[in-house]
Every structure is written in C-alpha cells, then in structure tokens.
Length: 105
Image (tube, rainbow, N blue to C red; front, side, top):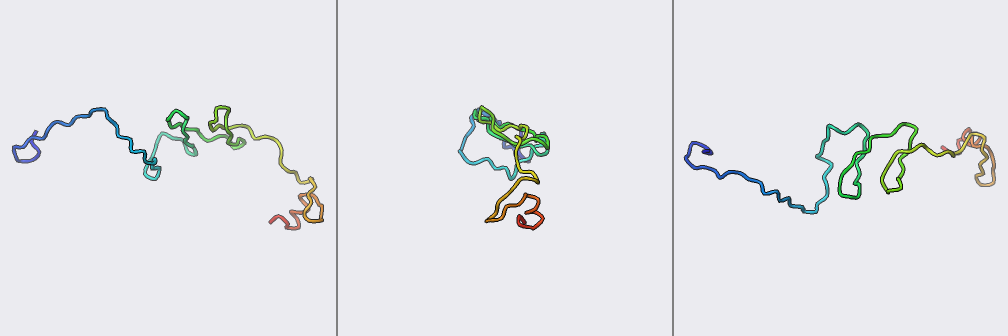
C-alpha cells in the first residue's frame, strides 16, 4: 500500500513476540485502570503478577496473611477507654481527665 502519493510501498509490519524488559520501575503516574474499584490497592503476589485488593469494610484493618500477602481482617480488640488510668510524669488521672485538661492536644 502506498504511503503517500508516491509509488513507494512500505514493508508489512510484523510482531515476533519478543518483549524487551529493561528492568525499569513501573510508572504509576501515567497509568489508569477503569476496572479497579475506588480505594483498591495493588500488590505483587510473589509470582510476578499484579493483584488488586479491593478496599475493606470500615471496621477492618489491613493485615498480612500467612502467605505474606496483604488482606483485610477484623480489628483486634484493645485500645484505651475513657476510664483507663494514665500516668504522665508524676500525675495519674483517667484518660478522659487528661483529655479534659488538654494534656494530649
């Protein structure tokens, strides 16, 4: 097929299935993916494949599975309550008393 009005013909375009891997980093700045859900994260599954982890529920925390992969799990119990005692310096008060004093702001 002629390229322009000249009679020069271009050679046929072909692919040889060779992929050059230059080892450069993946540039996420210019990548879009309309098929990913809002809030999803991507990770390497260890076999060189990018995987999507959809966002978890509001009550879940990001953890690491036994296979060393990210996963969502129920938040563990714990944390402080308002009536817990807290000592700062030489003063011991409840957590709420310290917050009322503005000691934690």
